[in-house]
Length: 328
Image (cartoon, rainbow, N blue to C red; front, side, top):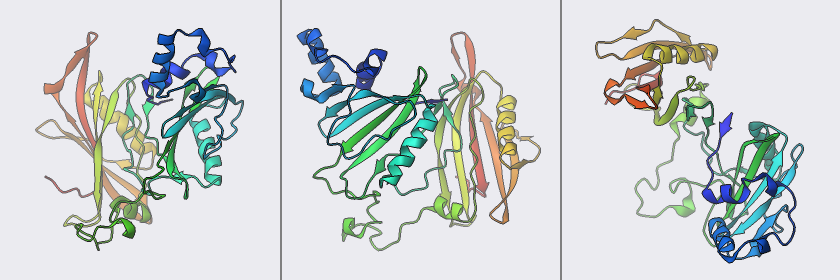
């Protein structure tokens, strides 16, 4: 399952099941003046005309795709943007994927033309929900961005379309870093004539397939970051690291990630434990017509153990690498 994080205003406006049905015109008249002011303030709007229960706002630069069993929760028009919320009988990820597929047919695409960090270690709150990054969409000629998110709801899911307008602001689709877009390059900018490179994109073009590692049961996992290079004395490499907080011990967490890697085509060696307590496992995989070598490392952090609700939570730092990563 997937959890999405939403602003408070969305929860105030759209959390109730009652809003999923067309609402009588006198809905707002039932509220006191203070209640109306609070609702409008939370929604970032100034008048009732911007609050449209049961309807899709007219004049939007996108049309919300028709999803299975769809009903319209409503729309909120805000300065510089709009919110549209629908309910569907499809599961969250299926609903979001279907919406993006239809939008792509209409010219919408990922706003940033990047391959991303890889997100090897799946973040988790520790309650069975995964935390996933949402890539905003853009369309050439449309001055703005569109984010599509989905969350579980009774009988299916709730899908939110959040559009932000960039009217009056210079923007491109996809958005480019300054040194990628000749029109955005300042004459005095460092590296003005140097071509931009995405090392991970080059590694993937050579056949590298990064694993997706789900969080151990009950663990809270936070991605720490990733880095990659195709240059340097050690040659091409990729590394991702994360922080794990769990009641499980180091060996159990290590076994969980090793099993996930094995299921995705990586062959692990024998786990080794160093004098400092760090566990390491060598890895090999056949990808892109070559044998790739990697490793999984886990460092227990006993000095950072915490207790929550009477449960002892171990702190474990984990890292996945491909190639020889330079030491710092």
